[in-house]
Image (cartoon, rainbow, N blue to C red; front, side, top):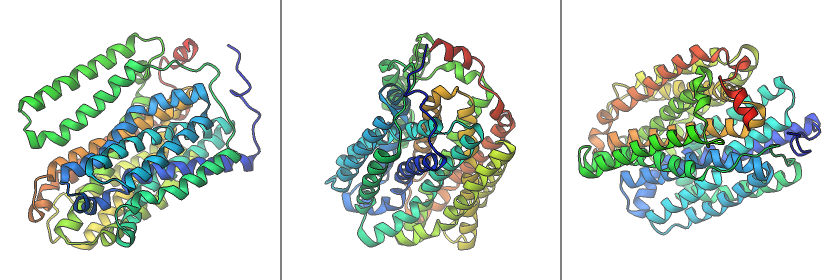
Length: 475
């Protein structure tokens, strides 16, 4: 089928291409920041709205669950209606929801506003990557741009706690959301001036039943992990929720296998390269978000740190991500994704093991060293994972590639919060360090998963998942 002019526009100048990349990175910095910036402010939110640890978990996961559930559909919407247009819709919704979060009078209102924030964020992540891929026709330049994009996204998540601690200390927890307003305005203006419109030549139909089943699947399983310790794993409510989760998961897979234009084509996961990238994305974000939540609660509740001090303590994590993320992008361009993935897995494993014996008197230098290792591991991970995933799908489906990978990241973020929170939700400050030890072993285990993924990632720049070509032709 012939393509439209919007499908393959004339290549913009190099300066304009990298300006577009900067605009997309600005929005992605915002999305990543909001995934972690709230963590350090959770104790202050709990005091301000009179809500316990499980309610605070929902404050974080309402955002990530909705974001994860809608990412793929948002990528399809962008392919159909125009990537710049959907990108600007996302900025607008995200900004309005941020204001609602800042003004929330209760925990329920905050959770609802965070969910709407997730809707806006879902229109930014895959669409930004698709815009970047569309304006970078040269494969080598595209690889560098993807490395920068992934690095900025990873860096934003790592610096979230530091930024959040400073804001909570100076302006209170509501400033965590007010800060989004000027960034949103700047991104809207810059996108209107510099980002070209583009869309797929043959846009996919929206898979509404698949979208509903995917959202239910993610939401139910995360909900089980959050509420299971409270209601009891063998209680009727927990067993019923598990049954719903199993039915939704099976129904989603069955439906997607039978549809001509599925939300997520299961055939794409037949290739070990693409599947490994998705698994690696989940593991890395489980590790990061579990570490951030455990760190926040331990430092503020057990050690008595202020929000600013707790955020400042994560500076080594941010520094590790800041240094290693761009380094990882360069390594991917030179040697492929295997080496940075090996470094990521090894560093995450070492960082988790450093705190596997955590107690209330663990030395500050041990904590800082562990945070440095985890931040460096996280920094090394994002560029090769994104590069591997994009390499597993045709360029015309860049929005889908970005959406699936971003979905995996946000699923990992939601699972990390739910798993870590479940370990410490009913623990008093004196016992929190001991209760969190399995969480640090979980972080180490995620590092081992990344090391396993590295074994298959070396082929990513030159291969596509089996069946991809036929899928692309069918579409």
